[in-house]
Length: 385
Image 1 (tube, rainbow, N blue to C red):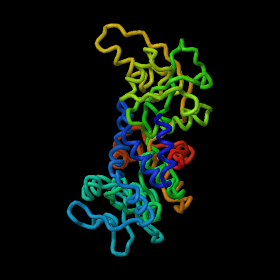
Image 2: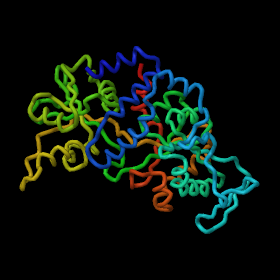
Image 3: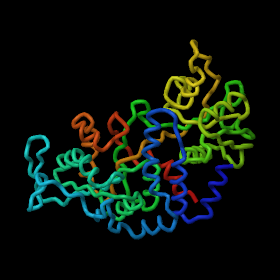
Image 4: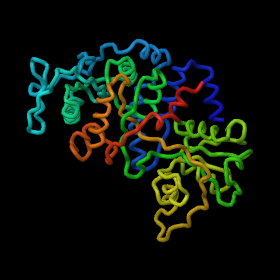
């Protein structure tokens, strides 16, 4: 079974190579409606840079940040240069974006934000300026953007305190935190459709007689990802904590290409349960909230004039919410700066939409505060042995 194979691969590897396997697996998970597609694309776009061998990953974390080169061959391990009206020779910056000149006081050291420059540093510098300027104003200290071409290098720089702040996909944050235990999540972007994140739900047929996890002994489960992926391993781990061990208790685990195929098997009675995603954990709204079940029902409807009857499906378990990836700081960042950052980021969408759009390209509902507790289920997988 997938879970058993995952456990065997973890047991045969050191912790950090195992983390690499965990992250690469995450890139295979494909969702099928808009806001989750956006979340998955964020994950996949940066996870492509992590497909390195395990020795390279370990070396990058143990020996962080060598100079990086842009497409033009220029070293970019230093902060992106500011324009003439953003810095002065004495190191004290003037903020002019809002029309008010505010001199930064106390000659505070710059706050360094590490970001991926997938389209090159020139593009990043232009796009990110409203965000940089907004945080500089909010913190009343210089803010520098440091460009990285590799997520491994960004993680290594952050864990080594060479940058103060970084933006991560959820699975990559879990891996970075597992490697050092030195990061703190501050906020995560919010989807209007799933403000708490997405849930993995274990769905059965209403006439199956299965009412709880205790009734799943000797039964079969369909996963809706052909090659396995992080949310499913996280869900299987959470199921184990709840008393259902896939290796010990289930007769089989069947993997399908997508949630629709898994739910077809369930409706036909070829499996006893399906593990799929949903934006709700409540049975009464499974078919009205965005998720695999509503997408399945809409696909069945097709061009029919009348809607088909909803399948008699019942959720008997749901995972903790899986939030979007966080904006995180090194835990050496002061409590005051952390508080100022959370306040500024939560207010950003309304206070300065241009700054919000500069840093967040997928979710439109702003940021919400998050804590380490929100990511514990992912970190548990990242540190599994």
